Length: 136
Image 1 (cartoon, rainbow, N blue to C red):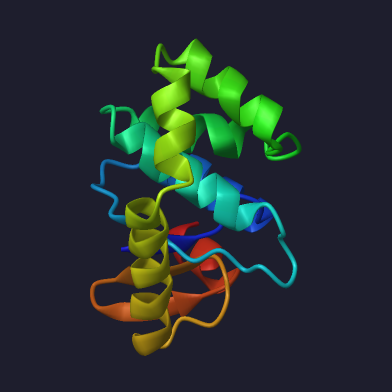
Image 2: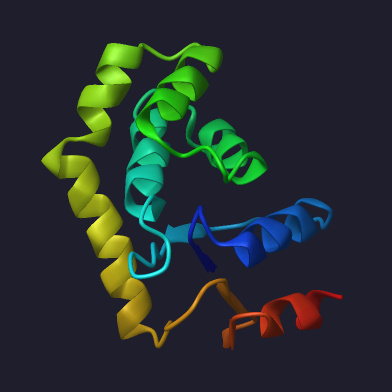
């Protein structure tokens, strides 16, 4: 299980590293608002894309271009993925999506996550850059 933040550069590095391994990833949102102000909207965008079956495609697109997480870029990504952009925008602003992102964040806190990236590998929490060291 990986807890990540779409604005965290180390999360993007971890995402690339995991893609090169033959592992199944369970991604959980852990947007760190204090240092990454667009992380919450990006997490909601991924969840909204998931409403149309494109969570992982949006996830990959967000990590691929972390410097462009403002609304027009999120809409452009949604359009490029073939999503109904109006529905995507309504979903990402919905209470249901926000509730899922908040629940993911709270679950991380209750499991001891305090930084990103953090990953549980074989039941052991590896916080921050430590997870990158473990994988290399």
